[in-house]
Image 1 (cartoon, rainbow, N blue to C red):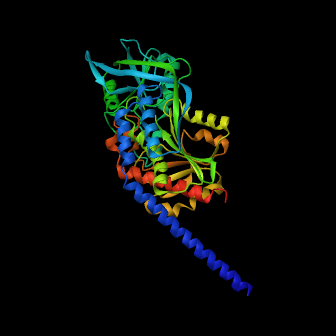
Image 2 (image 1 turned 30 degrees about the vertical axis):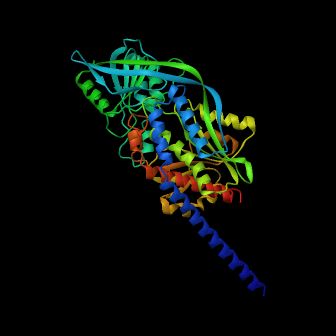
Image 3 (image 1 turned 30 degrees about the horizontal axis):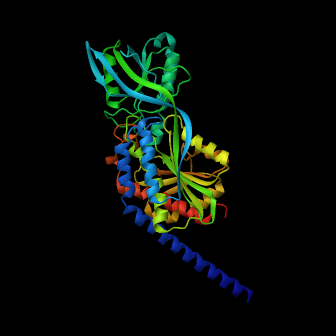
Length: 454
């Protein structure tokens, strides 16, 4: 009799489990159906790119972007929208150019200043260049060979690597650390090959790291890097003239925050966000306008579909991911000062292409719990949920023990557009972007409803 009763309980449990799974499948489908048929976020992305390109921290367009997105979040019906102020160093680039002096002629090169490059004299810095393929080569050449010259870092990203982020990681040390090392060896300026495996006329900018003193530092397009290298082989004493007009300032700026209040645990926050700033040479569509609009879509989809969130959903559009990463640290300080309980955080800052997977930075137990949801997302292209890093802006929350996640889209074309003028609204596909919005919303819904601690 006891065995029959236990069997009866098991059958009820299995029936309820199957019913819950069916309900989850239906709910996730409703999220995807709404997302891929809505153009609201896509249209707002177009407006952001049009009205506020080059929205690097401290620039006029960074404040245009904040105002534009604040109104948008208010129109979406967030319960609370507010600005979180903070102060930070900033770097404003007014212009940059370079010419190659060949046979008495000045031939323009496609270049862009790296942030935070020093300014050159008004007439520019004119000197012979020395081509290198690594930081070690600079060290071996030493001051006696580099003093008074312009160092030209020209190691390409490896195009044979399937994972383009690994290719990027294998070459970006030249940009990040090369100019400061060149300065240490007596160089008067530096040129870095753009970190992309795509041969193009677009120069790609990015951050370089100085300790105190700086020099004029530029990136050159991959096509012109090839041209400059070829010219140098024929003309070993070839000179280049570099002009940079930039300034360092201190600015008061903001993270933009919007909350959708939770019904059961309103003081626990599920954070989702991207960074609102973009480099001075780009509209910043994929990096990271898409991530910002995908994050706002989480709020819109919860509201429009009537999804009841137990915890508060907090959308954060961070300022200054690109240059000094001040926005992420500012929110971490805000968390500490106000004793905020961030339950989970998800960042989108890897492009708006076809969804591929989520990374999770958390304990093995929490990772295993989240991986149980993959069967609901797999029909929509989410291949896996794996251990891994999350994002620069939410990274500081790791110190509070917050489980972190990164949304990852297909990476094959991302570095064709990364940090350059080619990162335009026209290169964002609405369906791909919205499939990402739906994936992010679905993951957040499941984490909120079924709890990470159970």
